[in-house]
Length: 427
Image (tube, rainbow, N blue to C red):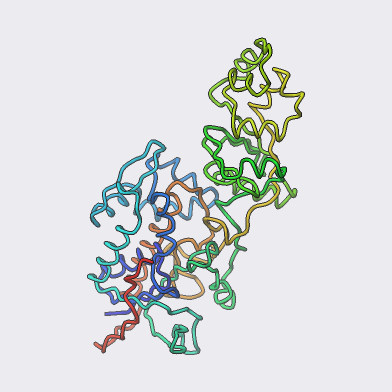
């Protein structure tokens, strides 16, 4: 029996451990935090979005320029297989009206508890509070613990160390320096699925921060000049905007801001009505009604949407049916900066796929496999992030076990290492 070491206790690492253990190899999982799955639990606070039910060609397109690298892993573990896997853990799922797939109870903790039980039953051993520090001269893995440094010999390694977002949960990007010293190419980490700053007036910020803007469309011009239209909702924040369609546009917005310093997007506040319909409705006599009352009665514009119009359109423009209708259908909003990486939901950039072979093994470090968000890919929220993490983790775990079986020197039976903790805590 060989030893597969998994470093990282997020979804990708846990799935790598599950797949490697299923082959009969000894699996040891190490994580720097006091418990595993912390970001997974955070993702479940608003309802754990496991995956998405849309047609697979559309699903794959969510990974943009990295589709060719991510698709093979997802083909081996597509959304339907993910749902079946959750079912085996005793967690039933359903498809929401948006096409997103959730556990019936919307929670992450029950799934994680069931998953950890199955992993322990399969023989996976957890070593928490072990921070990976690289390799020593004998190519042993180095870990820093409360008792000092320890070294671990592995026949194969899976690195599933996450990106750089939410560092307090363990994804702090500290692995970048370690792999850079090994001459592994790494693209700079950037925020993805994050809020974007807008220079709001103090009045608007004070009045509307925290308000959702529902059922709108956002039109974004990409770096290639192609116009993209995203339908959904977003939330006003004290610094700008975040949520749904903002996250969908964040990759394009990030690249344009990097080149030009800011970017203008256009909001359609009334996507279910045409410009002509709005012009006709607003052209009705206003009489003694205020402009605010007229906009609400004729166009359904009130609350935060009315506030957005007043924030951007001069007051006299709102009194003109053509100008106000045009503004409602194409309201320009200037975005000036993305929120910092540590506030982002996910990370763009990371370990270059060109550094990996088709088995997700580092070409320059045989026997070392990589998975999850530490790889250089990004996708919008909607289940795409978690699906890719699980799928790449599963592939890396399988290939690591196969590497042990075909390349590594088999060890004689030996005393099992003392477990430093089983990762029971979900706090």
